[in-house]
Image (tube, rainbow, N blue to C red; front, top):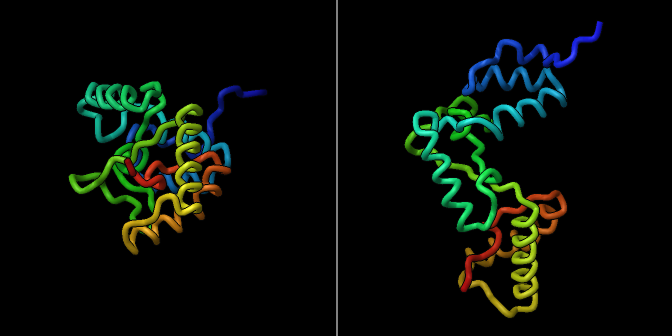
Length: 169
């Protein structure tokens, strides 16, 4: 007998929108690729993030405000990390609760926005390599060397951090 819509048994007991991080870790480890994909869809990219559980309208207002400034759809902006789940899944920090010292890890999933950032990165990288722009100090130089080296690799994987592009006039 075929059972359509059968979920991974590892997730059967996990029904809380902000689940225990150790239970999630075990389910993901045992559940394989399908469990990882389900976890990413259900807990990492959808639903009301933990940090906004008591004020979901603020979450929507924040995304709307950001979308107008980034020229992307508000739905393409989301939160990951402890702000999403209520506790950390980072190695060595698993289970650390989201608190007043925690940050919000925002991300955008948008082809157009990604392509704009890639163009900006390539323009900066070209200016840096041709010495059209130069770092202002040793710390900046270390970051620029590292960003210029890692940027193309990240881009090839379909990922870029906007912080890798210096905020210059």
